[in-house]
Image 1: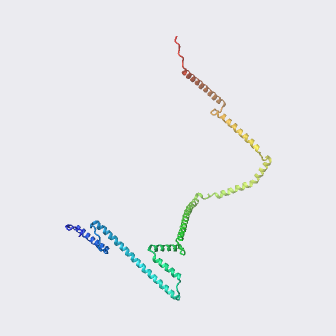
Image 2: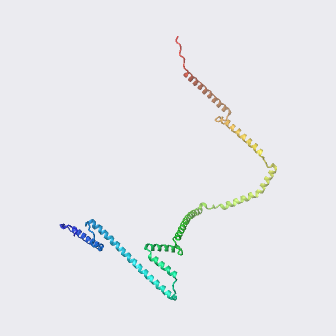
Image 3: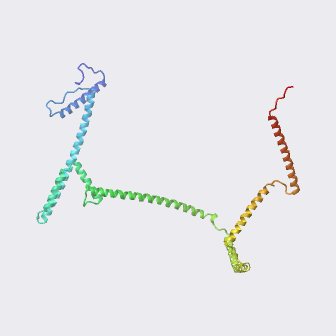
Length: 322
């Protein structure tokens, strides 16, 4: 409770618990800072001890411990992987030595030895990211089937080719889907049409066979009369003769027909003027006289009205005084 003033008094259990918890946290922070600044002779720097500082230091200590745990876990994994690689390398080396002993102790190829040494040096010099990238490149080359020449250009070219092939296959699949949908639609329509054709309305009537026989009988009868009709037509042609009109005759006939049409139009116009009259001639004359009388009356009335208008509108001269 070094952070509390000496004259502070604790009167409640909750305050006492809070003070005890704060003291415990400060003790943990002091221990953690001492470990971090153990290499410095002066120890941790001086700072203000309050609640905000305590919260910040606790968060920093928790994050630091989590990072330390992750780093330790990663280090253990790397150590285990290194031990496995060393064991595998030692096993392969022993197998190579056994093979060399079996071959009679011949010296290995210098080019092969140099190549293995270079590859080993490169592998050992690679960073973690570099090793990951190299592994991904090798896996891609093997998956694409170009392990003989796994250059980035070849891998990129192969990827572009696969992308184009994928696009083509996708378009082909879309066309096949559309064709399948069209076939299904046509199949549905065909099934519906078959169902309609199998209904009662499309079945032949019971008297169809009788009608066919009657039609065939009529055809045979007409066919038997056909030679007789041909003979009559030939005899009639010999008696009357077959007309052979010329172009001039056709033109004259057309002009005569046109003149008849014009005459018909004139007569129709004259006939339309007599529409409404009775068909009897005497009655028609009486109707005509009645219409003429009405026309004369209307004419007289018109003249009288006109004279009245003229007299009303004509100015009168003033009379002279005696």
